[in-house]
Image (cartoon, rainbow, N blue to C red; front, side, top):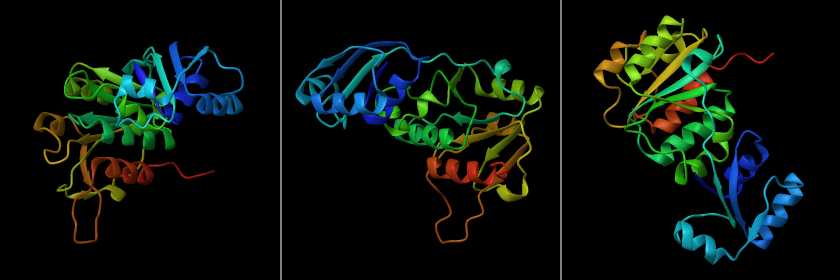
Length: 232
């Protein structure tokens, strides 16, 4: 997979579980890397920005860094801790949105994000840049069928909360008992019927303004804040 930009590359270099293949860096970017991280785990190829532009295209904001690496290993559903907080994505395909969700998940200590092999973006490039290093801290758990995965998680004792703007229950009345998995649907389409049927409860974010819907990554951030554990 390809990672580019300061946060994705720096976090990947600092993650000893990430197997590295090739690092391209401009002189200034390499100097910043070594200042922040010390000795690097891979020798960098010094290049001009145009060399990275040629690989990524002129619109990629790479900040002088390009890294080729293996994907990170992901846990199975059986390997998750008994008090896990998970997210599950129901056909969310926009890599910017998924990357923003990963970044927020990393900030709130989410144990993993369940997604499907089909109807989901690859964890590389734009997604990794939007995640701003979050991919090193929150594994993507790829399953064949989301409904079956939710049924399996339910059997393990997970409370399955489906986020739905039309739900009767408000999110702040649901509680944050763990383990829990929050299921997010694609913007516009929402949760598929089969996915809804596999949830224990459907909940909505109680909005008080004139706009009654949110971008899915913003909804994820509000939900994770609402379900966070009290400090101390």
